[in-house]
Image 1 (cartoon, helix red, strand yellow):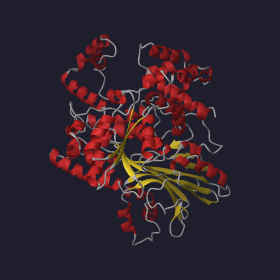
Image 2 (cartoon, helix red, strand yellow; image 1 turned 135 degrees about the vertical axis):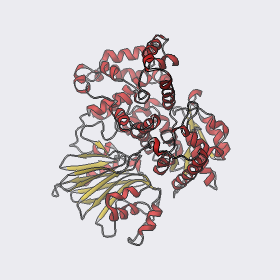
Image 3 (cartoon, helix red, strand yellow; image 1 turned 60 degrees about the vertical axis):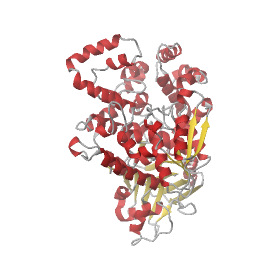
Image 4 (cartoon, one colour; image 1 turned 120 degrees about the vertical axis):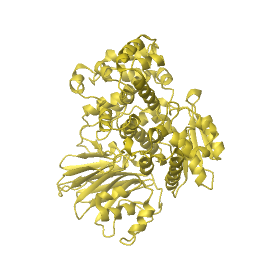
Length: 623
């Protein structure tokens, strides 16, 4: 696991400044604390930071092919590199035993199409000196990030935004649509970044740039799900048997490492399944890690211990008492863009604990999206069932009745929305809906932001999957929007801040493509989720884990906002410094704080998102 960066001026007389390239690389030292590397060819410069995992003594980057006509910088892991290497040895000579050289030689044979052969997580850049072109690529799900700036005169790219910001000519003008999306959902999705001038390479895409600055963006893979006529019609017993073998293979590939390796263990079905599979494959106790909080409602460590005992792991349980006043600004800086998923804090802490013992950790990320586990999938299932039972003519009246019920009751909350389309349960905003954003923006900001629907990406995803069943529509939405923009970003940035590599066996494209053909009733019912996954790995887990309901990786956000963060929140939202930014109505923000403190409404997530934005603005915009 590493960090990469590069700079290319299309005018060959404009030489790369080595000091600038070093500054770019130094800004991501946390991604690769073991060593750095550089390659400069006049107007082109490549930089690299390394976290040594495979071929620790070799595979230094930037890496050249046999005649130095091609160079690569690469961040990630290719799990099938040994099989690919075996096919390449008849045409190429290898000087290392790692995966980087395999990619380079594969690119010599296939060009940018080589990414179709790669099974793993990656962000890479390959310079072809003969063709005078640079190829950028990101893995299928977007586990590894790659930002770029391209203006016709130069290309700048890097694993994190802070790399590109090292260049003095980069504008920090905010992208209006990205900002509106952040306030709706708490993150910014590719291809946008929070800055108008900088873009993210979207999952499953390549970008090929020639010496004139012309760029060709191509999609090589999308997480397509099946229409009903293409479902796999085998029995659940046969499907679970094949899934079991696919998962064992996925986990086995991700256990290849030349450095100590372990696993996150929350006690949920996803991380428990990974630990169960690892224990089944390993002759030694698996190292597992969990964190808990003093507040019992947020502490899952009792369930993690049940799994650890059942699987006989070498388990480390740590109770953390977060220094949130100091850790939050540190994480805000690390994420580069406004990011409001509060679980970034426990994710960083568990990565920090694991890094004291291992360099690589396997996680259960992707389990909810691939196997059908989110709570809103259950809402969708109920809504789908009621749509078939309740005539459309009766639903508006039921919604009016729901609106008369006491606030915050589950029945009332659902009935108020019984006349909504099923897509509502997937596209509803986690923070500020369009009406609330309208109240929040100042008049000047609204002129720019009023026409930027933050919900657009999710609605587009529903239109793209209109021919699929409702569950597949939900899954596609989460795979391409929520997971790509939030979950994977959170895991990458938090773990890399701790210099820990995290691998996700459940989010393997071979596993996904199998699950894409599985009928919905084998994924989810009104009373259960992840049905096929549980059947496939059931014998590897204690019964108590099968019966558990889903619990997110959450923090006592309300208590923190009312306690240690109270003064920081007041300063960030209601200060003259914030008002001078001209984005938010001060009266609206004051009302949110007042209602929350009085217990009239729970605005925890909204206030948190505003706090995160203002801390980011002070760090990146004011600077």
